[in-house]
Amino acid sequence: MELTLIGTGTCSPVKDRTPACYFLRVGTSRIIIDPGPGAVSRIAHRGLDPMDVDAIFLSHHHLDHSADVAPWLFSYKYCLGPNSAGSDQPRRDPLIVAPEGFRKIYDGLLDVYGSMMLSDDYKVQIEEVNRTEWEWPGGLSFRSIPMLHFIPSVGYLFKKPDGPALAYSGDTGFCEELVELAAMADALLVECSLPDERRMEGHMTPSDVARVGMESGVGKLILTHFYPMMDPRAAVETIRAAGYSGEIIAGEDGMVVGI
Image (cartoon, rainbow, N blue to C red):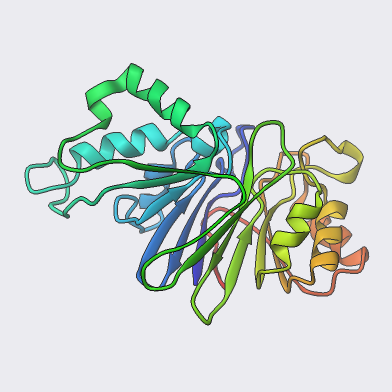
């Protein structure tokens, strides 16, 4: 299981961090998680193929986590296939997994962009999730659990058969559901948005992350979703000082992490 951190920032424009996006490889499966603004090009910049994926997973519908869904669908239509302007790679039915409410957003995108996003050659599949468990052919399993945010938001667990599991918090404040999710994982990709003194409802601080890490027993924390006022090194120090003894990785754009 290999996780590439495409974007470890937020909606706040900064030089060295771009908005949320993650690319997960599990065996032959390829998954885009939270394609924020510019994700399609940023994935390609890292030497990965944003079109050769099995699914797109959205944790919630804020634009810094989902804005490139429409550009991805546009590229998928016009840049794949034998008569395309890009690759002759065959197209499959795209799958988008998202919290409840995404279908309404998708229908709104169709009202605006219509045939630019659709083709008779394939069918876009949408799976709305809340507290859900399911399994792909070949055994890769998934779980979604609602998180504590301003709008419907879920965290995900990605598990390889008889292998490791990665949990992803999406955007959330501290909640028992996040502890529950992390307890099932070998590693937790977790937002660490703001320092403790700038605490904001619906987001995590280093002390919150430490609490989740210790209560869940998860062995590895991968910190992401840093606002400019959050110093990642200080976050690691705070988490360690709080008593968490597992591995801590302060995420950077382009970092590749093995799970």
